[in-house]
Image (cartoon, rainbow, N blue to C red; front, side, top):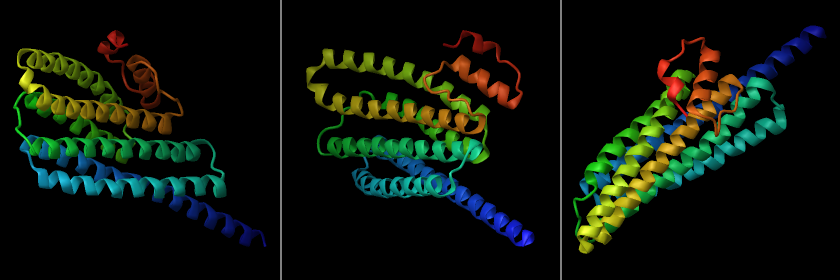
Length: 253
């Protein structure tokens, strides 16, 4: 009888591990779709590709459905398995991550909408250099944070969070430049405002990518680094990985 009990326990443990791996795999699959949305949104807006933008907006429904499905799986695991410690952190961090992934998809859809609206009228070229530059930064952030999740790579997650500061700085600079353009030529206000909304969505994608990095650090280390400085975040990562201090971190707020 004792042997039967042990076999039953092993079966349950194996099944539980499979359930955890399922939600992790589903989250990464959703991440791949969202990464494609960001890439396509940039391609559409920079190329004025209205047809691609229309297709992209339809893809947003898929990420919405995946968020609901993964959330339901997470709730079921918590209710049935009552996970603890690292298992609970995994479920919680994935639940938080899919919410940020869905919001990244929303922002990509908003960029697509601006592309469609700009495609219906004249397209001013003001601001598109900034869109390309900031777009490349946030596209790399999304790609890298998903890679960090696949590898449980806290150092890469930290670098993504650190990059968000650069995106914010570039965004503020771009805003000042575009406001100057509008003041110099009032006829450009409408088209430049569309570009400003695109840049705003890109900046928010960077914010959500940083959130994803924070969720992974919590998942692996058990320390909630949300609303913490980069210096504190780096200290948490260093303690977890045994890495060496970065002299630049002493200047981070």
